[in-house]
Amino acid sequence: TATIEADVPVLLQGDGDLGARIERVLRAALERAPVAMAIGADAPAIPSRLLESARTALQEADVAIGPADDGGFYLLALRRCPEGLLSNLPWSSVETLHATVRRFRILGLETRLLERWFDVDRVEDLERLRVLIAQGTLVAPRTKRVLATLPP
Image (cartoon, rainbow, N blue to C red; front, side, top):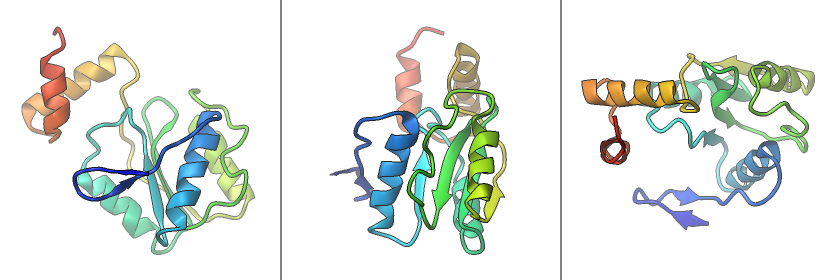
């Protein structure tokens, strides 16, 4: 475990496929708090309203999931994490979100879908991020500094 500036613990993922790593971190977080939220590292500028929507959704639901434009998800927030919750899912696929939500429902988890957002997987996504930050639509000062070092 490490910490970032806001004194928020950062939990290391460890080994395994993406599902095993996310599940491990969520379980560790739920040992410390009543809810846990995993945010994709490829979604560096999620608006705070989406984080707030996830928090609000967990007041009634077991799970809040943020659909990404590419068929995956950018955020997963939950109140409980049954063993194997994220195992054997089709990661990095247009079916990731649907398969994950189907799994949650099979396990009886009340699930809320959040507003759709994007993550950065392709050059076009990176350009979208660059434009939104330059316009001031998204605020991500560190990402902005890194983007400034990349060729246009």
